[in-house]
Length: 409
Figure 1 (tube, rainbow, N blue to C red):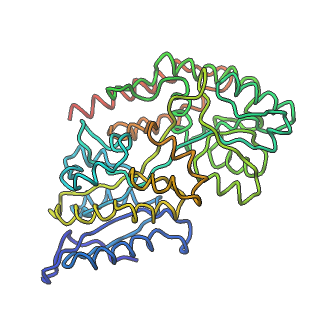
Figure 2: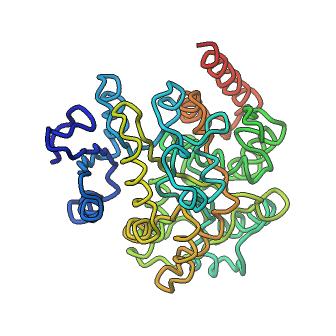
Figure 3: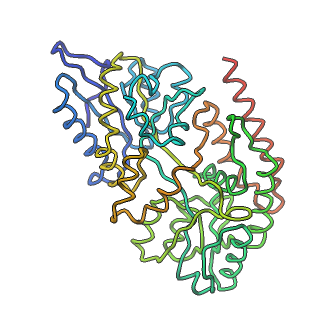
């Protein structure tokens, strides 16, 4: 374990500076722990930058966000944190902005829609670290059995394919996880496919838009109501439950991210991927997810932090991390390199979606509360008698009230 954090940027009287870094662990065992990546990165950086030491602490995803929040509250903010959300710290004025840290070439290399997702009031504070996008996954064996020749591109085609799978005796024609684990993600993908989203281009919440109400009414009546989500109750089903069922060969179609590929391959499932179906044809955008790096002002080590982050975002170092975990790079240079790598062919469809992906409104301090409301309430929308207009309206009012309270501080 890395030593416990002490006051930031201390030089211990030696004339050298120490940057404290807290990062999340993307591995699921000691063998593939992210600590190895960060330790190697720190050593390489120190070799090129005499007088700057990097002290890295890698924590599990279950605890890292809270630990960093506790450190900040105790007046012991790390210099750099690589965690899930940045907006609260940015709103409190605790972070350096991207243009205070990165050189112009590094800033320009970050893919534009992902960089924008890191902005608060048009200033970028969240630096994307890695990303992923979502696609429709389908079981090729079950498709062949049901006589389906191509992946659906519209809702009507999706419903028709699900009916054929149902007739062929497939347990779960379409897997719809609106349970608490990842309801905000499934909800957003359906909102995008229906031509709306959580917010408009001005960043105003549009949760109860006419399009969103129509989307979830269609889901309730035309998919769930017709038994096309099979034996799983969407309101209680978590994403990993659906992934596991897909890997057992029980699910015809579902929305998924790159992790599902490895899980399916390990179980010998023959699968295909396709862009998300939209209301009248392919959805105009898919959902993107990013994790974030932020730099705290507390230790006053802006120059050294900037130098280290330029190093982190070099093409070689970005690819070293994304290649290990089958994630997508957040820089154009690394994406282009990955696109030309035949060993990463399986990631190309996800990579192709990145330029027009839409991200959660993580720039809003209200998002955490809205996300919680979505987890608690969205499942009820698609069950028999569910009322999309009422539930979406309730979440919209909560979102607006939280936004108002945030701005009134």
